[in-house]
Length: 166
Image (tube, rainbow, N blue to C red; front, top):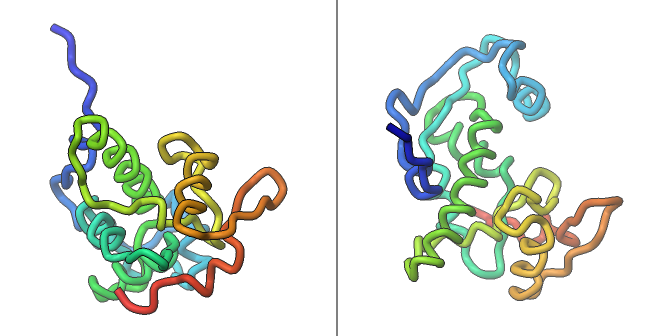
């Protein structure tokens, strides 16, 4: 018996046991990112379901952007903890992007403007469907100026476009 590979939309389904609050430990894969955001060892962090990430992404209107940092801060605040696992958040952001493109091929609209979600410091996500080039094209179609920084792309003055309140 062969097993069928899950679709991106199936991967976007909520996971049993999440959300889950844990005490931050140095061994966590997201430790460095969380520590950079001001979370210390022993403080509470949350691992959330994809639906919470998607909810944040859907709230970003045309003309505005969000980074993984803002999403993590919003979710941490919602759960009344110091931080949100940036590793799982990043995975769910990427999954939402792929699920959206997969749904488009099926003539379905998930309503997730994933291209308005940037990596930390305004960088484009090369793990989105079509890579950073596709991400760049979608942002430029909405009027953003995208500039090269070394081998990577970044939205010029991205801070001025960040959502004020979600």
